[in-house]
Length: 504
Image 1: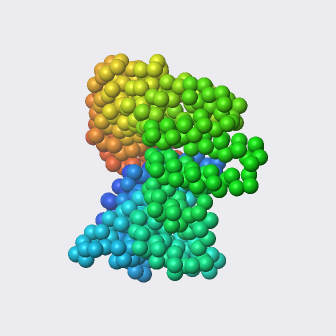
Image 2 (image 1 turned 90 degrees about the vertical axis):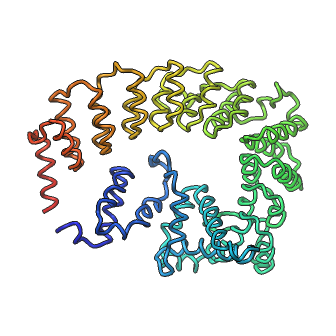
Image 3 (image 1 turned 180 degrees about the vertical axis):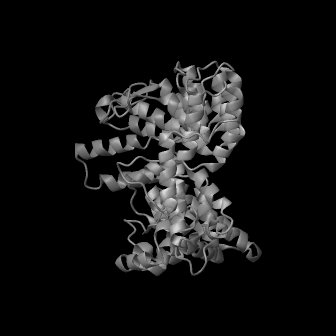
């Protein structure tokens, strides 16, 4: 049976597995070269990929989601037909249209404002845990109908509209819905919907005190942590005052105070120096912290030691690019190396976290404080941060296996940069194999040009890789460059025979 004779559902599954097994680029190429059914998948190809939430214990992809996920979701929302099978995409569009209808003062700009609203809401959905942003792609119409019957409040249109209005700071809509919902809204357990989460969380994320006053009466720990992490000083002050009043009512035992203080410590993940100063001032005025050390509380008030706490915060700074806060934690004694018992060598190097997440300022800061640049070029090359690789090379950092890492990830520009930096590199078998697997013809030709003449063993490995993965285009490219692709070994013939039997 020919591929085009298969049912469309089977074709869709094949494309999905191509993405999972061979990478996103390969899957997209398969769809693009198939002109007959290209139009059927132009707007839906990634739905299944994004509909699968991660589960604990399973290895997670890095990065956990494509960088264009938010724009892809917005595209799907804007183009989902009224009779489509994913009603939550239409729900996002309907929510945005309703919000603009109620709050726009310029009828001529409604279409543009609706699009902007959809993009903002989609970005918020994607910023939430993957279990949340996978919902629009995984909840089919029948499943959604059953879910609504079980718990209408979490899936109802008004709940979604209310939380979205809070996030977009549309006060008239929020007030109207609070009145309309009446007793159905428990302000101590804020309005909630699966797509956008809690209304109070949306308000804290944006630092909207007016919305926090409207939709919440309590301030759980996570709200203060959320406001602090987003650098909203006034929201942190308001929430902490509300939290203190709420927690002290009838809770005067020492254990309760310790718990509150430790919770306060955990909120110190912030890029805002003013938020940091505010919380430090609160610590020093608290009776439990009567023995400060360099502005930090004593160790007895932590479940972990102060050193562990500082190191953990420094790691957060490295992952988020909070340079000013990283400098502060280093001045207070944070270490560039943290015990991490799940790693092979038992040590997490903060500078490698900065290389992984692409924050050059943090890399430079750690170097200033004596961090070792060993393996930094490899990590930066693996994750495609060309500017970090260039700076490290200018500093004379060792390259290690950076070419192998860059080639395996498909970053041809970094491969060229490394080859230009060290013209003496000659062993390029592994990068060549990576170029074959990725069908990266430009990178393959560059590596072939810079490497020594291929030995029969290396040439055979390249042919074997291309055949094993069904890459006819790369076999043709190898043939073009004089590699004998017709003489296959026993293992190659077994692969070919399996392919023939499957196609038959």
